[in-house]
Amino acid sequence: MEKELNVTYVTLDWYVEVNKYRYGYFCIMCILYILIICSNSTIVYLIWTHKNLHEPMYIFIAALLLNCILYSTNIYPKLLIDFLSEKQVTSYSACLFQFFMFYTLGMSEFFLLAAMAYDRYVAICKPLQYPNIMTKTTVSIFLVLAWLVPSCHSAVQTIASAEAKLCDFNIKGIFCNNAVYTLQCARPRLITVFGVVALLDLVILPMLFIVFTYTKIFIVSYRSCKEIRKKAAETCLPHLLVLISLTVFFVYDISIARVESDFPKTARIIMTLQIVLYHPLFNPVIYGLKMKEISVHLKRLLSQASTNSCIQIEC
Image (cartoon, rainbow, N blue to C red; front, side, top):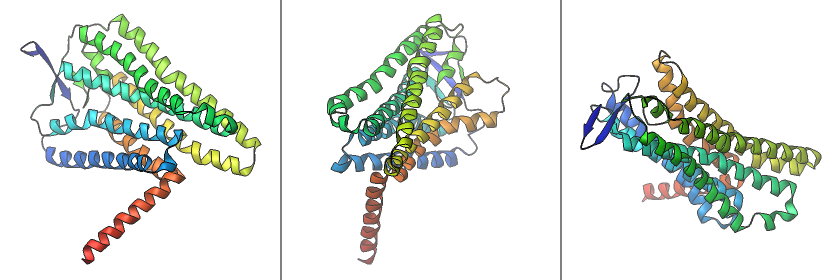
């Protein structure tokens, strides 16, 4: 236990030795972080600047990608600092803040995907009522709830963890996720009970709603004309792919905290990297390439950038 001026510090166990190749790792992770920020920000910028994308579906996509930017920013800066540090140490309060942001932003994606599913359901199954249902007020309420509800759940668990007595000060991981529970001498009953409630409210119920909604969409589309089926496939498939990716993301997270201590270290670091790399890069690729309206603007933007670059070279 390390305490200075009543500050408790914990050590991050990175599974593998990083000191030997720290600068190489730093450069790779820095490039990936920049790539995540640029790719997600580009799609958000296109949605922001083009009026034909100012529709609920694209607004939810922009919110989802903005969520990815915040999620990555919660992890990568500290990760990059740790690569250049002799010891990977953090204060317990900073660790809990990262824990709070990690689950608030992670769980909010399920709510945003549920909002997207509802938007597609109304657009395809109730097209005449769509303008009256998906108003600006409705979209705003969905966005507020998508971040407010997960933050309230995460706040309860964070506060309970802050008051719990610690018997260990070594976290098996490269950032603070639910592995912080392993530091506690005995997990408070509030955390256990509320963890189950959070899993039900923030993951299982939104997933069931999404599955139910898309089932209804596919039934209606199957009974409709070819054009309706094509529209449903173009707009729903990207959301389903992201949902699958997000589900894998949480399976990894739960596995990391639950697997036995003798689990191969190489496998653990690969599983952890899936969380910080795969999902934030997957979303902009899916929405940038699979969503037709966004893809058109993206190709135009890249074409203009290429043309301007050629002009500068000629000059």
